[in-house]
Image (cartoon, rainbow, N blue to C red):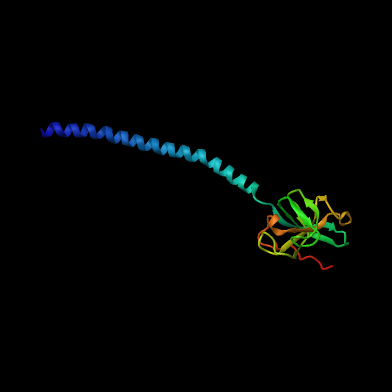
Length: 163
């Protein structure tokens, strides 16, 4: 009986090992194929995330002159939401223009009323569409929470000149 049992075990054990080995090989092959298929998607997703990242940087050598005659040679070029442009950095101030394009530029910042963003930083710019006070040509302030800045004030952006 011992001879009959041993060959049966040997015969059964050999196919199990081969099938197990085949399964492992197939599993490894499948894992490699899935990894290869996922890598381009991961690289593509990373590229998309980079492309979709907010644009926000300080530009040197630009030239903007406001209605008061101040000339600015540096600006913050940044993604933003559609926003009201206020005559002064006050939450309930007069809206003089609309900022409709993104990204937009901002020449300086000023401390004003506390706004929805939880700080008092307002950025000075020229709106895209004048809605009030046409002699101001749309120059005014946008609360920082409407702009994709972090932190506020954004590093390298100058404080607004008095007067």
